[in-house]
Image 1 (cartoon, rainbow, N blue to C red):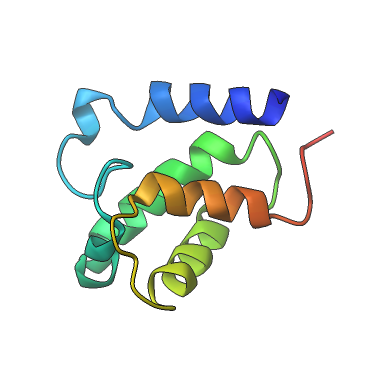
Image 2 (cartoon, rainbow, N blue to C red):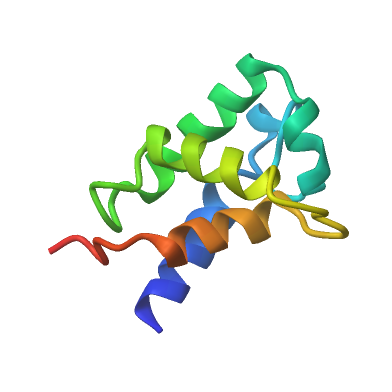
Length: 99
């Protein structure tokens, strides 16, 4: 429960700021990921890494880039949003919360 609350607070506080209005956002459709530019992907994964590395040291920008690439390219993402993919990536993290 603590992890879910921390996830919600980090997402709410970090990604919806006006400075990140352009490019990929958590409320963007997941189907945009494969078509996004490399700089948009790097920017998004850097933001996710900064927001979540406190939960686990392995949740850095490299982890999110690899996880999102794999998740977005395995089939029809339908109505999924990037937020759903990020939640999936966090839940798949094997290291668990930071001590």
